[in-house]
Length: 80
Image 1 (cartoon, rainbow, N blue to C red):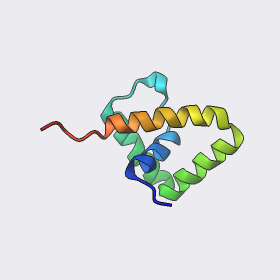
Image 2 (image 1 turned 180 degrees about the vertical axis):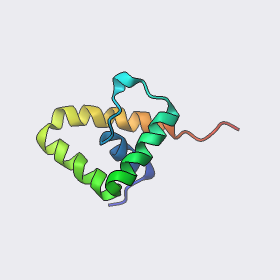
Image 3 (image 1 turned 60 degrees about the horizontal axis):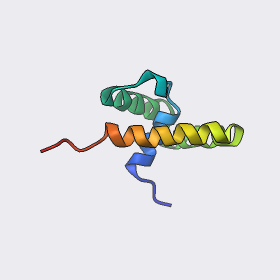
Image 4 (image 1 turned 90 degrees about the vertical axis):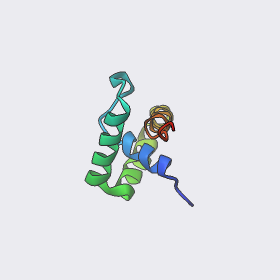
């Protein structure tokens, strides 16, 4: 399966400490994503995500939707 950058970033955001209630800026999201990838690695983020889905699938699905939307906003190409 091919995984996109957005999905990898969303997985990393998922395992970070950021919450929707934090209303993070794009820069805060980018920093947390990089921190999670450095801490856990790409595969480690995916493993932690899978574990959370196994234990709390409804909450995990809701958080992942937020992560995907937040990453899409945080990594938008700059307007020309």
